[in-house]
Length: 145
Image 1 (tube, rainbow, N blue to C red):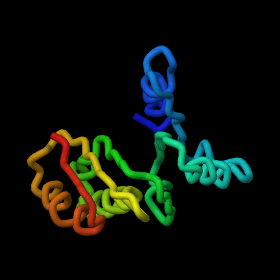
Image 2: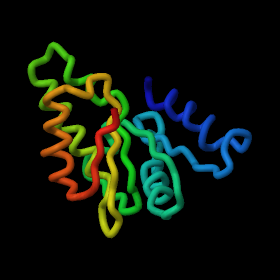
Image 3: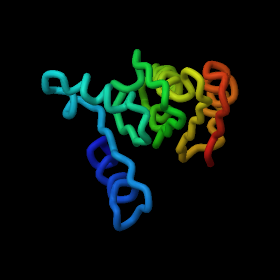
Image 4: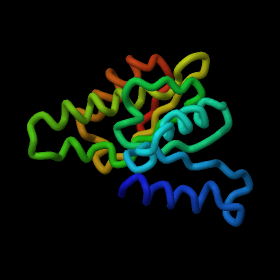
């Protein structure tokens, strides 16, 4: 599922007055939404206003951005990269997971990382959750089965 489809599905649940008491804007961050001049700056300012929102993004979100108000990061279908035929894929997947997890709990707020997996007993994933993400974030982490 791509970012557009995920954003649409989340919008139906969290940004629809017919299905939700509180409405949360869904902010999509990908190549499609950041192509225009100043679009990234507008998105960045919107995120850093401090209002509750749901960010949906590609790898663009993972690297080099400081969002001090982000307290929850969800990694859907996180183990997909562990199943690739490319021998480097598990390492790349682990690096990306750590980078994405690093968006939560910056500044004064603690963070939480939720991982969706079809392989909750995957040794690499368990080691990453135990040693990698939790150690690097120094915050509360929990594997969701």
